[in-house]
Length: 531
Image 1 (tube, one colour):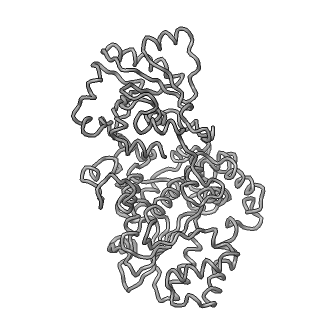
Image 2 (cartoon, rainbow, N blue to C red; image 1 turned 60 degrees about the horizontal axis):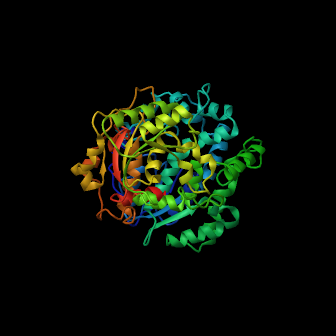
Image 3 (cartoon, rainbow, N blue to C red; image 1 turned 30 degrees about the vertical axis):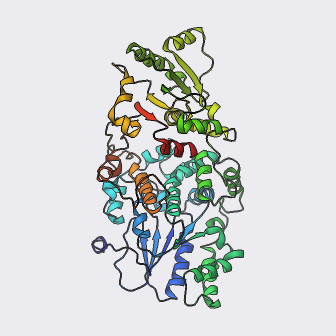
């Protein structure tokens, strides 16, 4: 049986097909019931595709594809044939709270209560998932312990399974863990929304909230009309759909909870989870909810920079400009940062320098002031460039590595030489601004080491190829995604062969030394400032 599945030929969904796509906690069960009602009553066969299974070989005109657990690498496969797509979507904050309650009570024990990996908890390197066969992939998952992935998500050290993790972590910690686990699914949902949005779209974004009892009839009739179903006005068809979706309490019941469960929709735990999502959430979840366009609580992403800082981000405006050295630091790294700047001055470099931090460096003592003076460095706090509406809870995420790209955008330098505290320079790097590559592109980048996936018992590096595949799908489908690029766009041979694209490494560009002209690379700088 498995061998036959692996030999199934791949053919894209055709224009006369219907494709139903649902993600975990956006309504996979209701999608299946609606697909069966509407497809079978119109004479269409339903073919179910889970995880990375390719489309079935067409056996008849007008097939229905039910796609669950879609991966970003496969978006183009399902959207490229011109089929009508019904995409079930949901506010990411609701996905997280529903998933937390659902998994915490032990639902889907085959993976929540297993000490081994699964496609719901872990990710495979692209090389292991390239066949698109979920049975072959499962053998890889079965050889991988869940423990390293649980640590990666932030689970308590004692947790051996995801169920243990959610039950031993507190409410806020557990919801943050579920946010991290669900982020890949949510990002895939958002990528599909982006790809299928625009004039002439043949995609219906079907929000799970619109299928509640009060609005179900109107939503169902509207969906049937959009699909041009031959029996779209049939009241018996509607009654059958309601029976399947609401009968027996197993599809569209609130929170999919069972009677007596501590996680049921009306329980104190569920109320506390909803309150967390409405009042706090995490910065990442608030952003995902705002990006979805489905949130009533977080309808907008707060601006990152103040209006003045936005002008600096694109051209180094605001009274500054020119060239300068930029670095980020923190109390534990300040001595190394100053040592790096001292070595830099010893090479003869006379460029002005700025040390950026995110509310971590206080006023220097007299010795520190003398060292800063010797290094000819000014200390800048990123908080001064941020928008006043930005929640204080987001500051922690801007420290460490994230300080570097944000400081590049916030500085009043136009031409930036970014250095790490651990960079050793033996010649004056000012000459790099004269490099032909920098003159052509407004950027000079250096390759980083290639860091391959770890041992079999360790989680692979989070595959950046998934993110690149998502970006590529958006770029190919949306002329406005990167308007400076030629259209139609397709990945270059250089991109297709890059370790990042192939999933061989998460390292490609070394951020310990790079040059950027914000005015010359204005499109990239403006995109970063608007994020």
